[in-house]
Length: 267
Image (cartoon, rainbow, N blue to C red; front, side, top):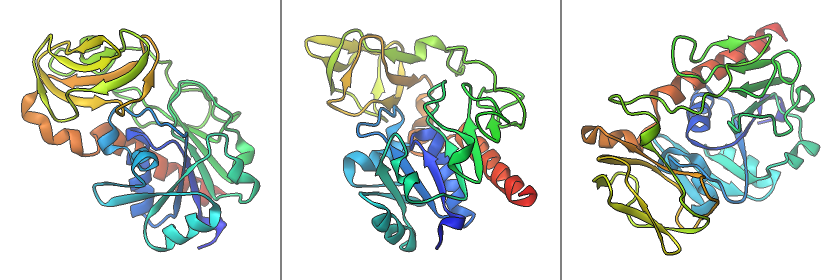
């Protein structure tokens, strides 16, 4: 493997994981760059969990924490996806990859630019295609989900979660206080409205509705007041969805693969 085929993905959350799987299955070696304390909510289907656990598998993709480029290449040769704690992309001083995908989904640009790789792709709002990056992928659910934007920006963030059985905002739970969180009910557990699902110090976090916990931030994470920390799926029959990549993630992943192939074809 050479840097000529390497794809660097910034972020290893659940949406990024759909992209990582798609690229890996298509034969591209992938290196994931993460922060030292990832805040993924749907962490059971987020390869960023390797930062905490050392190794983490989502479906058919296994991620392994690494500490330098040599270790990254070793894991790629073994068929794994290396995850390096490098939120500001210092590794790019050592290698210029074929492509770089910004999959942080921060709703703003945290430093990604077209000079980082031969092909640059960003997910969601906060980037201008043709200026900041080569292409932007639309992440808003609806008719345009997954659309490749070659000039301009994705739709702005509405702050409104996707609707499930008529439930939107109430599905998402935000921290009622700041402090380290202690999980009482974790991903996949059934809960009733008003039930305590976590504690932040002496402050209880309660379920906003009946259903299945679909996302929960990592235990002992230091949260800030109003931070998104969990979400609930009201469909108790859909428990298996907690452990597999979502339709949205797969759609976006396919679009990223398309963007890379377009870049190669026109490069």
